[in-house]
Image (cartoon, rainbow, N blue to C red; front, side, top):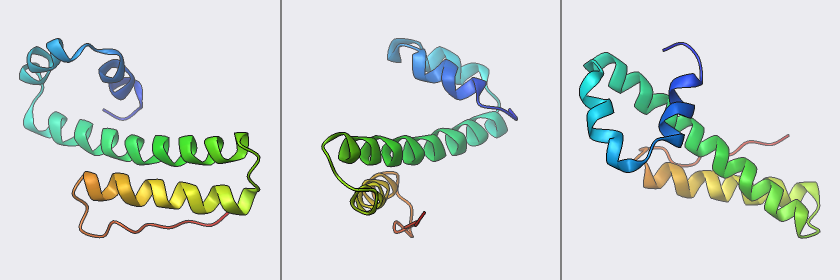
Length: 89
């Protein structure tokens, strides 16, 4: 699984099909897919928070702070032991 297509497939898949899909994957494939989805979840939360803040009239610096808060919350929810992964740009 070297590209983003498996995660897109899962994002579009109804939850009722998750069990059948996971049953077909090897342990290594499950691990890799989980890693990719977790990474995507953090990135999507970052961009959503950034975009939301900018759409509401916020400046870039405020949007960067908002996306860092969102990433921290998602990383905590996913069980990362080091939840703070602030970035600046």
